[in-house]
Image (cartoon, rainbow, N blue to C red; front, side):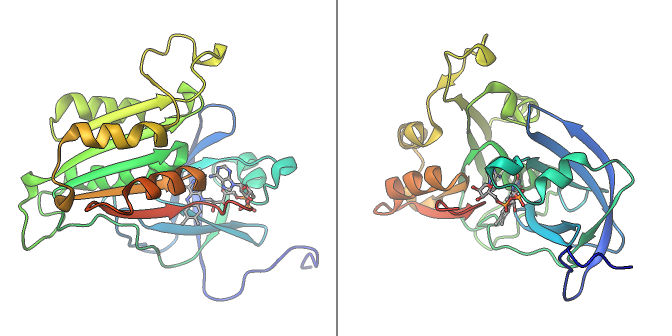
Length: 259
Ligand SMILES: Cc1cc2nc3c(=O)[nH]c(=O)nc-3n(C[C@H](O)[C@H](O)[C@H](O)COP(=O)(O)OP(=O)(O)OC[C@H]3O[C@@H](n4cnc5c(N)ncnc54)[C@H](O)[C@@H]3O)c2cc1C
């Protein structure tokens, strides 16, 4: 018998299976899901998954040519207003979830610009990882009339309170060491706390460091897109820094400030 108290999902949906999960820091988890049917997306887009009739969008970490869809999720505790994520936190490998059949979103790589400055807080790094993985695995991507594949640069600026929250720092550090067109610049905002012991990198909120970092890069603003994704306050601050300039600025907010 159907549970009357549970919300039900309306419209078309398919399912997916949780095939792997990995806990990071407290309240951060990576999921790998296998859609029951073909699922196409562009790097930077999101999928919508659901459990118990509650659905939420999640940007996709993986490149479209990977076998599974990878997600990086911050668990919002019930006492802080979390609805779906407390369920996700408890999900075991093998569990089925609902999945909307189509990926959505327009926060995608802008192919006619040479330089891509990716600013993120914690899970906001997700769309950028997908874009970089796709770029490295597909010499035909992105497709542009004005630029060749080897003309692009990528600078990832990621802020977190603690060093164990970056999620993809090992991958990005490795890629930055290997390719001179990729740079990774992580910063922790609470450097003096015990959890950040041993941190030798940049300190401070990422939005307070972005303007100077971008100026030091020396890119032509007309050839540069600054992307911001994650925390709405960071996005607001970075948006203000670039709105009256020749840089192109685009954003993806994971939640609203007054939520
Ligand atoms: C386009 C898009 C892409 C998204 N991609 C991701 C992603 O890749 N990873 C991810 O973790 N979340 C992502 N989110 C947020 C996600 O959809 C959920 O809102 C979030 O997981 C919390 O779900 P919830 O049901 O537990 O709480 P909700 O009912 O959705 O929100 C409760 C409260 O939690 C806070 N909150 C929401 N999201 C976050 C977060 N990520 N970190 C900290 N606090 C938050 C807000 O204050 C909100 O009021 C995305 C949202 C959008 C719109």
